[in-house]
Length: 162
View 1 (cartoon, helix red, strand yellow):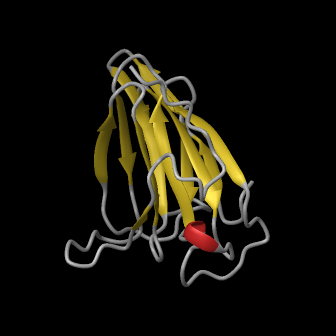
View 2 (tube, helix red, strand yellow):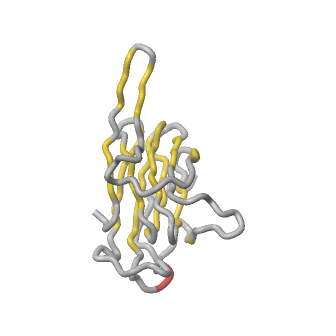
């Protein structure tokens, strides 16, 4: 696994009223700190990515549907995929891929300096929640972006053109 990435298998507790799933606790080994909490959705077959953060850690959970979350370690890399300001990593150039959602409830912690994105692989819209360590700064976003089909990251999303 890429250096700094952690995965937490989430436990779903059902009863006659519904289900409960704790995603992130401040006493978890992978907890860094709390900045904000948000929800986003992705339509079937759509790719959101690539982006990275210089300071922010993400804690990503897909609560409805399924996504393929892909991480690329650009720390210490050269060219467009370089993660500016990041120290080189023992896993520079490595790609990790996770399938998470209703059928595989996971939290994936994404450290700063990793390019990441996801593709909705379920037939319905995917609902993703994130508890990043920093608040979003509208006037100075902590984010770099590359197109999903950049040649700087050796990954093919398998995007189907319709």
